[in-house]
Image (cartoon, rainbow, N blue to C red):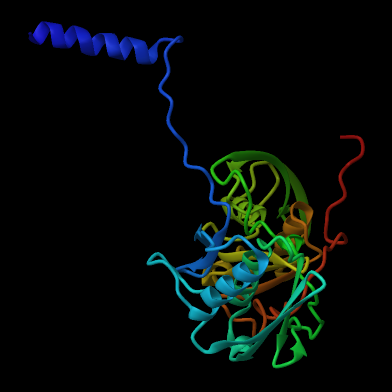
Length: 311
């Protein structure tokens, strides 16, 4: 009997491994609609399936608005709205949903505010009749940290915060900036990277900068222990929040070289025009002595060492 069982098991194994045999695994159908919420560390959005009682705009708007207002979330996350932020009212006209808040909306950190805003916008854009979402705070237009009106938002306002093919990988070529031996100039380095699609490009860039250069004559610009606590693009601005090591354990190079190595690397690889850096949520003061954290930095070409056209 044991011999027979062994032979049967061997036959099953051969069938599985043979070219002509396969085992089909039933994949779960993606949810048509979802509720969005934040992960526990407030660094990314998550979602769970939502089945409306009636699949029409009016009903879905009411149900999703109740979900956002209730401040509920699964055990592995936290609600989109903090406890001190209250959804005041909403109005839907001409494919645009206007949502008014009161309370401590402006007390959220920049990273939390961007994720909260993205989660709410992506939640309501699931309703076919809604194409744009606009936020107001007690009747006044929502503005960014430079007092510019944010205006109407669409799915394109929030890059890399959601998407399809969540378990697939992608391959990209990144342009990274390191420094030369003097620590006074930036040098370019191309790097081909295969990475999970769910990982935002800006996180990939910062990870690769922390790993250091791979080409001879190039030197590190940030320490290996530098970690991006969050990296978010909204309104074509890349907001990165770094740990203390980024500020306290940086290599012995010019301060502007460190900042623009990060800025240039991000802007060359991501769909943004400016970069703002914070340290563990703090935007006050300077990185060290002269480069303010509050500033919106744009690409700096003057620091880049010109490549030899004969090489």
